[in-house]
Image (cartoon, rainbow, N blue to C red):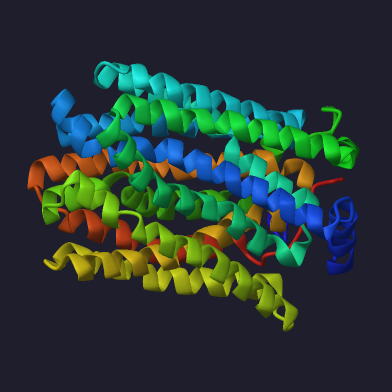
Length: 435
């Protein structure tokens, strides 16, 4: 595979800076901030819709008489579809552009979230989750591409941190909102109301686009915007940098999805919390995750302003995240709810520092015209690894009735992801794909 030393040429720092400045100059600083706020809103809604099922898991499992394996199968209906759809969504996004592509994605998943209120059992629930995944697959490739086009290079980790913090914010808001709606109305109403939020966002985003027509002009001016000069999949898969990000996400992202999908269930079965108690504490790790998003982005910005290279900055943050995050294994051995939550929060904080750094890499390695496709392919690595891990978690829990093996296995994948991923990627610097 060609890498930094292979057929692909490396673009000099001044050329990269000029390219980034050309795109970012299209929007004023104020407009860039507003754009990041809009993307934050989209990710927040995305994760509220995704998290409704996890919050209601103990309730729905009793109503539909689901085993751990049954619940895992419903989760994997989402994850399998997400894994297949994300590369296709990234490819389509590079052709439609962020404006049209992201609006279509949000409208699709919002409608699917509302349809979930009609579920009558595990099969229909799995079907609606699959439809949700088709729309949500377009979200993160859109965010990565928007950041690559309109945000200056030194600010990209912070910008991705802002965008990515919506996942934590949504996961933090969801337990409180969903429990309230379920207790005062019904679980079906919880799906219906949360699903409708996306349509409000689409309206706000379209107003922003109309106020900034230069955004569309910039996208149309990118190499390959006509659809005739796009980097094809065969070319992208030749680069070891593509596979490096794929492997990082394949090995490390299952830990995040375990926390998202299984922690409410873990707190219910292992710590004896009621639905109301879960709603009172399950948001805390995601608040910590939000703090990590902003903290990591700020640290990366400070390091690069002080003279650190992009390569040194990215790899240092990844190393710290990969080495400290396994402390979450200790949560499985605690009997105290307080210490259980402390260890989970520490693990999530450092996992998130790793994650937003890895998600910045496609924009570091590849030109803006290819970021959506690369991000989509690497996102498939994330979901493929998570599908396997979710299946294993269900099997292990049904067999051992203990979370110790689950916490240990997923926690130890982080150091492995760092070693393999950094060995594959080489030096973090821009590649020339023949633009």
